Length: 278
Image 1 (tube, rainbow, N blue to C red):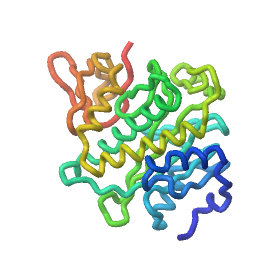
Image 2 (cartoon, one colour):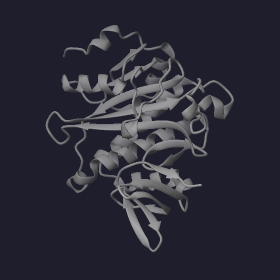
Image 3 (cartoon, one colour):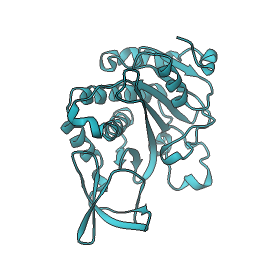
């Protein structure tokens, strides 16, 4: 397998991370059997996708200390300064039950949100919550983001890349993010343990992935509802072709769509970005 150019400059996985991954080995299963560590790259998702296209086995992980072109949902950039966050991507080649075929992308997205929020709670004790579909927040301030990208899904060589960014330090967020973002260090008042956070994130993703391929979708949705409890009955708004709509959150359905009451009718949101109303 030929390596992407960025990986030719990969460095040794830090000792504390290697020790933590060894400690989590039973939970990790096929995840993180091969880990690449980069001082700097454009996007860990792009590097993992290149590895997948070159035939890498599922579970491969790439971590970077800095991204120069990190991205989030809706085509936004993800601020990724050196040493300030956890920037990690992994690749899986899931085969889901036929009943989940049409909703697989949403189910994977929800499962990833559950995994990352649960991991942050376990590693830090913080009351991390989910904002639909998979932003991880503390009191409505974004702590972590997840980007799910599927390529040729359902084909023999298809794959899904899960990219996770966790704010470890408050490292000079741009002005436009300062009021809407937070970090583990800011919330706990102490430095974040990068190795512990990474180990918990990967182990939780591995467990969520096992639930997915085993068809335990109700368990994923139940966990998502519990971790998204701050959303229930909240007023949110979102953009539509005809303008901004506002409504009160009621639930998610079995497909992962968000159910919102707008006046006397219910709306199903299956994609897009929602904002908490004032």
